[in-house]
Amino acid sequence: MNFVRLTLLAVAAFLLLAPSSLTHAGDGYQARALLLPNREYGEALLQGIREARKSVLCTFYLFKITDSRGNRPGRIAEELIRARSRGVDVAVILERDSGRKGDGLTGENRRTAALLSRGGVKVFFDSPAVVTHVKAVVIDGRRVFMGSHNMTQGALARNNELSLLIDSPELAAEVTTYLDRL
Image 1 (tube, rainbow, N blue to C red):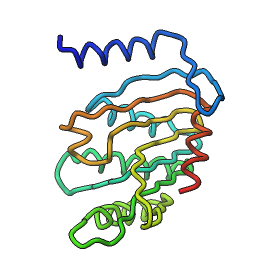
Image 2 (image 1 turned 90 degrees about the vertical axis):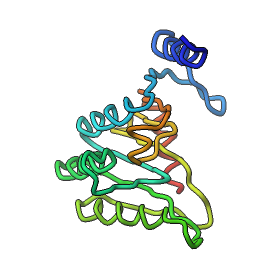
Image 3 (image 1 turned 30 degrees about the horizontal axis):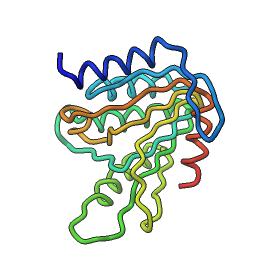
């Protein structure tokens, strides 16, 4: 077993088995965390959205849906629309670039925003004066998905990515407050 895999397993074991107290700015709270490497993230996020009963708040640097068969970001967008149709408050914040020529980021995010908006999802763009590179989802004010995964086929199917699912109402409140400022 290589060093990286052994390190990841040790971190996961610590997070899952040890009582944890995560702190931020002097405030402490209890949380349970689950490591979501590579393709595990997308499946866990889909399940989390399916189980959402009150709210889903997302922010991604890039949310790129394609017409290709099996497009995983497309499945997540569909699930966000389904959640909205069953009465869940769903909001998505996306990056908007500064308008540099050749940067297709805003175009990709606008295409996804149009699809989500047609499905009743509230979509917001950040200021072009600042880059919002956050990839986070807060579900029902309790579960927080955070990490390196963008909503792209590469990130959800091929890349080496690493994210966490954290069960903590306190952390969810902090992340929501942060995202509300974007």
